[in-house]
Length: 158
Length: 142
Image 1 (cartoon, each protein chain N blue to C red):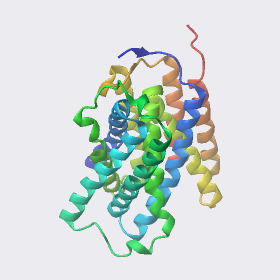
Image 2: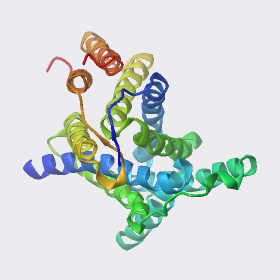
Image 3: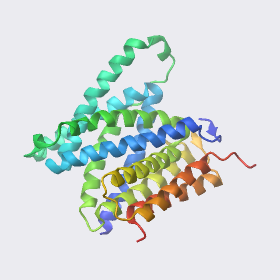
Image 4: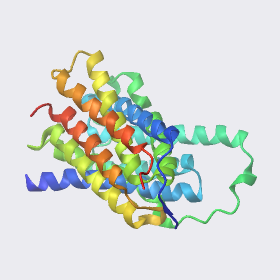
């Protein structure tokens, strides 16, 4: 895999930012459902309805796209289909931690730390067949600002 | 407490790991197909656990507002978007920008509901996140 050094395009950046907004609404809906039932049930329902919605989206796109564009891609290893199991496990870990002395804010902040550290490792070594990317000094500056801002929003002044 | 800290950290690692695995699947199929597989595999796994532990359908499940059942539809778009982006901008950039978007929109949502009890801290936090995003756009000095 080639090492990528260029900065992300503004369009990609805005898309990622907007998807975070989508996630906020999703988490809000999920939490409301969970307050009527349980965290487990709400995650189960989201995976069920998400599967159906995914099928519908795929069917719509397939009607418009030509099959020819798909040729020449390497086949996926079996482990590449395993991410859904991790998603299910994440829900249970998060709800267990949030019910401890950490509370929701502590769970969110530590989850953020876990994501950042593991992402840095994945980029640095190009784990799981993804492109390798060497972080630049400004990347660490950006990371510190975004992580610091997030912690401030989660905990307030402390 | 130590166990809870490790669990919370592990949850973050799993979020990042599953995005990487989905990104790898998207390379061989498509971002939307990867997201579909993510949801159907998760659904099967949760169904097995839920049936074994008898917690699939707790009381009161149907009393929730109808629109909460659309969380999964948003989720499938979100996972497809992450699988598409991680190959293009990397795991760290994707994670940081999604977290930034989540934090800023969370603050906006709380403000609209009048649920924010520390507006100055949130405002500084939002400014730091936007500054961090701007920094990723700086051209290489060398």
